[in-house]
Image (cartoon, rainbow, N blue to C red; front, top):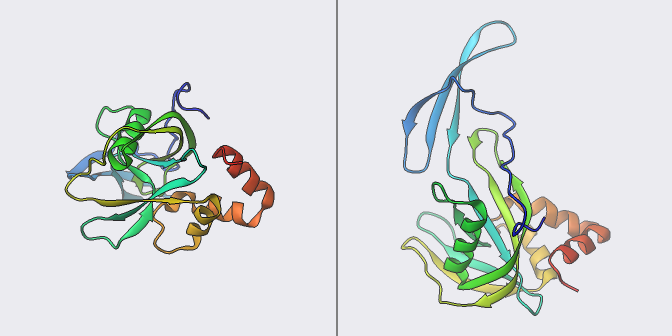
Length: 199
């Protein structure tokens, strides 16, 4: 799906927060909601769910077919390999967030964004991760990182990208299944190669 021309619809949660739920805590990143839920035996219990800002993940593809990954460090986390990306700001459009994060963390702009995946990683948090492929890259600036980021750009071949799925330091857990699938199934690998525009 080319997201430059298609409106991005937020996927529905498999366990939505009901309208009568009450916010019991407001944090910097997480809000906590609780509600009374009737159980199968007729009794009730207090259910709880978090809400946090959605995030965008962007895999940029260079003109030579290499995929631009990042080696990242953040306070309190082990170093990891991942994509460019981050939180969607309040009121920000999903595609605009993807463009902003790509520019901030790589210095590139892209002429084409393809929505590869959008999912709730867990049923207990109202949170969607949108994963994009970005093509038609143009280097326009240096990296513009916040104080909690250290990023080194790491261009890799398509095959190396697939191998990253088996590396415990790979941070983009939402798409690992797709990478494993491509490693194991030649037809899926060719589909993914085509999606990335790599010949």
